[in-house]
Length: 462
Ligand code: ARG
Image (cartoon, rainbow, N blue to C red; front, side):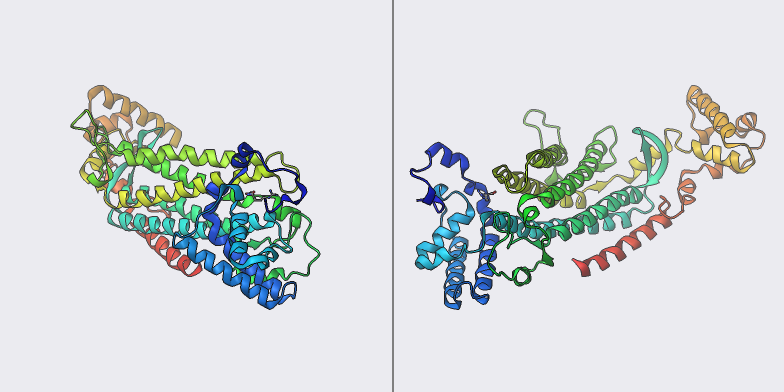
């Protein structure tokens, strides 16, 4: 008979039983479920709701079940529906009728809310740790490339020169915000829902705060209906994970472009690229492409959760059982991607010369000529027009701005002197963009130092 079978006169149809069962995926919550049950049983004992002996028997039984599961000695049953009832069934088989007291003053509705919160908190920490390691990698590479000149792009057209270190530090900032978003998400997941019962609390005198303390929560949830009826913490995680994936995906897109013959800015290590089964010459950036592809999956998980929740009346509805696969998939995917992305960028080779060469082309110092004129009193809009015409002339003659003769410059504007060549030198252009947050080697070195400081202070918090 089902644990809830008293009201029923016949068994569940087999098709329904399989359809209904969540054990195939919620089994991964076994540890949280057991730890939560142990804390609940201890509290029931302390509050005199069950006897101290009963609490001890339940606790010992649950600990033994946990050890058995971890040793691979215990299986689960589809017929027992979900992880909660599987564990309770195993407990009763092991310790007899006392096991049936565990569910006093508790519902699977507050139990699953607890399990997911506990699980998510651990996974947030693991995901953050991976992001921290990515940030360390970015700092290390950026430090080596504070002076590595490359073209900066807008519209994927060469725009103004930057440094590779500066480009990487842009991603450092993005992942920094991702870490902060996860910490924020953790804060809201960190409240303990047991005591909410099925929806309306319980008549027993539970000590909710004691359970929260024992399970390492910072506090308890504030409303029983909300505690069992919302999954916004899971949605928040999926949203944060989607943004992480969006950042990774853009980075991957650049890695794919940069490793093409058209760019040749980087070369991926052989261990992080793959070949073609037909074209012997190919070395493909599959890892980066796959991460870009998996981004769609995580967005899908977020949308799935948002849609599952959008029309549910308070409080718990069985639709909510659909939360877990999407959440687990988002967690697995974002962690899996980070695990492979970090060593991929750690091992890539930077082709400095090709980057520098690309930065010489595309009239990337045209803004500098305009700035030069503006400094000499020419209104910027007018200067812009003069330089536009100069560039047009250069294109016709097949020359770069550096190759124009001084007479040609003077023809364009009499205020131009010989020092123009110095002013438009690419390396100088970058060096003078030294405002905080800029691409100059000195500014990038500062950014790296600020990044290191932030990371060292963060570690004490995590
Ligand atoms: N397996 C269920 C879930 O994941 C647990 C809660 C079930 N509650 C219920 N009243 N059927 O959502």
